[in-house]
Image (cartoon, rainbow, N blue to C red; front, side, top):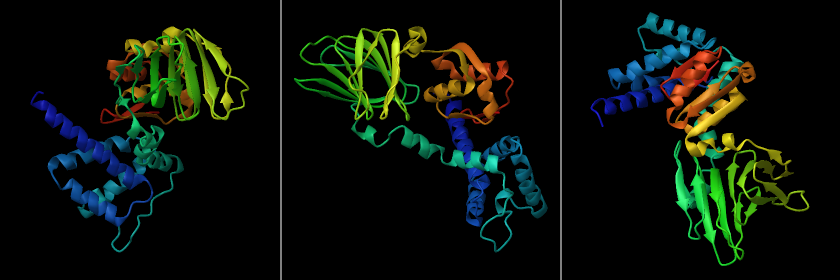
Length: 336
């Protein structure tokens, strides 16, 4: 580690904390105690105050939030007090203009960590036999010669017996290469349903809404727990299927070159809506990209991006699409 790296890590940490303070102050529920606590935080060191001022300037660039922050800064200059202490004495809650759109954005940021934790199934992951972090991939050999490749933020629990080979996919996406064993079926189970294979290769991706199964070789049977399907649905190589607790969707053809790109360290998009591209990139990079303007969903993205260089992919999108990007540290990015 170079001498500069600890300093950079500390700076990044302070800027992330400053973002959290900005979110708290602009969420519409800030109190005198919040502002007093921020004033204490800013006085800890010149670096703390510098981080807050930097993030405040960036945040002020997002209209119409700029007017609110400018008013606070003006009050600070008049009184000689920091922005955190601009509340009128004796009041317990600061009255702020009602910006419905931007207030919702600030509130969503404040709740983002909780939302992501719930969506990722944090509590069931306590029982995982293997898991991966953000942007991490891991190959997991099994006792029978089969193999699991865990994609980013994935977790599995493995239960082998004399009767069956069962894998619980607790979160994320995993690719399975299954060795044949006529006496013991290979089953991948989620809360929503089950995938059965004998000797094949396939991918199972569990999201908050549904499960997507892509077959790269052989055949699998897909069934839903308590679903309406009378019998399991067969899915063959080059096909995929989506299912949820309500039932199984139609079998569809799939471009395996695109579907398996992550196994080669790539992401491939072909005329994909920007919002879907951002959702996919968020799975692999630390931090979060948010699309603030719904009209940006109309823009399509095509390209091959390196999973190890997603910041470069973000820069490419900024250069090639008519969007404005605002960065809060390297991790929090707004597209508008």
